[in-house]
Every structure is written in structure tokens, then in C-alpha cells.
Length: 419
Image 1 (spheres, one colour):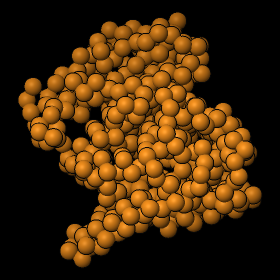
Image 2: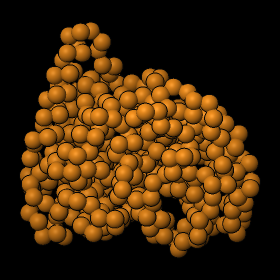
Image 3: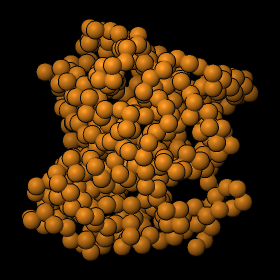
């Protein structure tokens, strides 16, 4: 192994959030149809899959290195992945529900630190005429945007158009570099830190608290075209529609828990920053207060859109959350986060590939991302656009949050937004 540069501080911070009961791993699950390495009987040819992926993996340095300790930090060292381990089949499941259960179980299984920080699992039985897949990539080597870029390179057979830009009222902003601008960012960062520590915007609720080892995952998908047709006349984006559906999901959960419906419920929403070399994680954080007390669903979406138009440029201008710019701050945040009452959930939406993905000749028919849970937050929703649909993964602490109620509430609102 040849040691390379030390990890960027923001990437090193992601190891801090990877500990017992919590894995800091980007996970995406999917279904693939017969073709290429998938036979007409739905069975995989694993040697063919590994041969087909090996050349692509060689072009992805993120997948060919391991983090080795250097003092209290880590540095990257080159290490060719053992594809017998990194690309492997697991026992067959029964349908998409079985794939959901596989993903739920993986949300408390860490990736081994003595190997490159990724794996691709093949899941027989997830669909009647094909296979399921699960790709896991540690957040130390990729945030959501760069993980999708890795998947595009790993899977695609033909050149595809660049993914659509992240929806925003303004383009990504590069934080200023003058002394005054840096001083302003530091001041705002400290203010955000204090707010994170002392804010009690979320009252007593089962949505927050110590998490169990029992995870639940549910999948949804909806037509992007129909969704866009409904929300654009209201001044909203697909991301605003997702947040509106999440609001409906939380209303359903709180009703199922016999808890009062608050006026609003704040959630944390990552926003993409200008991409640059040096670190794999380049995201800011936007706080959105979901107006749960608004019974007019279209007006609720307008209220959400007004917030995101205002807050997204601010989050991009501020850059990475102050406490996540290095491992020391991340350790503080990890401790404080177990008692925080600033946000009740996580919601993320990543633009997906513009064309059809193929894994060694097998077309990818469906793809669902699954959000990471952290701190004392017991629920999260992740979404990704692909093949004209928005694919959503709901992740909950199943011992505290009724995932079926969350999924049903979201599904009903998404149906309203597309009919």
C-alpha cells in the first residue's frame, strides 16, 4: 500500500459519526432486469459481474483505497479491492419487501475499515424476473452528489448526459474569501452552533430520543412529470413537493402515535455546494419548518416553496455546517446531537442520472436511496430522480416510529400531487 494525502478535515469528520448503532454510509437499493450478467431465469453470473466491474473500479480511486490511521487522523492508502468480498451475492429474499428488510438490517452494519469503504450486494428474489442490488459507500469518500457520480461511472455502459443541476432559485454560491466574508461566515457559523446547542423548537415527541437497533425501511416512487406539472404552477419545485409529502407523512405518524400536531416541524435538508477538489463532502444545511397545521395542501406547498427560495441561497453562501468542518467539531456535535431539539427529521433529494443505468448489461429498473439516521433523530427520507420517476426511501427507528403510517401518509400526498 502507498500512502497518499491525509483526509480532508470534513471527510475525517464522517468517521466520528460512524459508531455502534449508527453507520454513516450512503445506501442505494435497486432492481435490475434480465440481461448481461442476469440470466433469463433471474439468476446472477457473479464472475461475469466482477469481470465487468473491475475495469470501471480501476478508474475510481475512491474505491481503491483504504483509510489508515496516522496519529489521531487518517490518510488514504492505495489498496485494490477484493471483488470476491466487495461484489457478492447474499441469500434470496421475497419481493421488494424483502429488499426493504435487507436495507433496514444493513443500517446498523458498519463497513470494515481495513478494506476500501464500499460494497455492492446482489439480492436474488427481490423481483420476479430479475435481481435486487444494494450499493453502500461510506460518507468519508462521498456525499450524496459524488456517490451518484460514482454509481454512474460504476454502472453505466454508454456515455450519459450530465445529471440535472440541483433545483434552486439561484445557482450554487461559492463562499467568499475576503477577510470580511470569512469573518461573517465564522460569526454565522458560531450563531448556528449556539442555536444547535440551545434551541428547543421541537417539543417532547417520540420523533426524537435514543434509537434502538431495530430499523425500518419503506420504498415509494412517483412520476416526476406528473409531480412537476402540479407543483410548478404553485411556484414549487420537485424538492418542495417532496417536503410537502414528508409533512403529510409526519402528520400521519403523529396521529398514529396519538401526539398533538404542532404548528410546524423543522427538518434538516442538505444543499449542494460548488464542487471543488480536496474533499469528498461538499454540502451545506438548510432548515425547513414544515407547516403541519396547514390543512390546505396546495397552500402548504407554497409556504414550503417560499422558505426554500429564501433559505437555500443562505445555506449555500454559508457553506458546510461549522461543527462538521473537522473531526473535533463533529465529536462535539455527535454528543450534543443526542439531546438536540432543533430538528425532528432529515430529508434529502439528489438528482439522479439522466439516462438508463446498466450493470454489466443488466438495465436498472428501479433505484431507492436510504437516508442515514444520526444524533437523536428517529426518521429520515431520501429521494433520487431516475427514469422519469422520483424514488423515495423512508428510514425509521422501527421501535419508536410506525414506518407504515409514514409511508401511507407520504403515498397519499404524492398521489394527490400527481392526479
